[in-house]
Length: 101
Image (cartoon, rainbow, N blue to C red):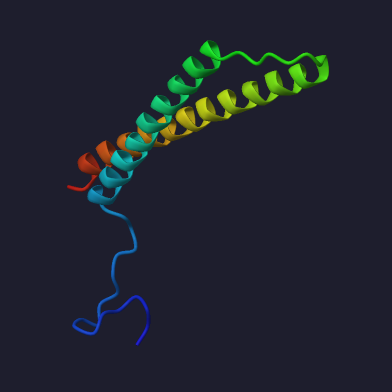
């Protein structure tokens, strides 16, 4: 027995994903984007309220660099998750209209 068949029927299964799979992926990615946006906003507010104060210019530069890196990565995660959610939503809508064919 191969992986593509089930014990009940000898017919191979359709390997394509269905609209429900795209919808659940889009909702999951949207939730992750929303959580990442909340984290990003809180990081920006925190770093704006608590600026680094070091007497050494090297330590000050390192602190600003790390702050910039963290904020940039959090917004990159927001954009990436949002872009995936948008793409999966479009694929979900396309699969609804092409399922009848």
